[in-house]
Image (cartoon, rainbow, N blue to C red; front, top):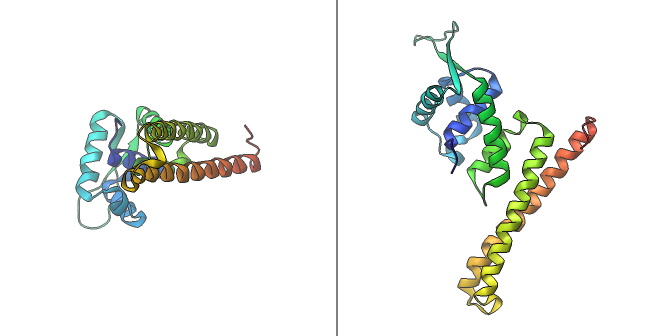
Length: 190
């Protein structure tokens, strides 16, 4: 189980990306990037998430002098040192261990600029190991229940996750390759 909700994870990313952000700034970004559709993030959850993160000490509120419009002066949030560590750990965890098609993994991908390429490659290699182990477990169960002699509907319940895992392995391998190429071009070879 993740210690951060998807909303909290996304909020930490956006605050890190902009160094400081208000709830309104974050709402605009959520709309621009389509997070509402693919990550189920709405206005209420943004403000509730900011309060939770502040209560946990992962972000700190700072009153801004910047005011636009007639409303109150916006409160902007910045990551604390503990919040920065939490974000890094959550990114690495989401890239290395979440299963199948998962919003968590997508959030981890969106946050790649907040960790080093080497850390990303290590986490993604762990994901490949994780996917391989998941595939082995499914294949063992498939074979123990009759494999190819199973009725089509039962086989399909095994073949679908095999297909998803294979596709994910190809994607992650390509991403690792691209990260390594970028690192090589910038003289960061590992």
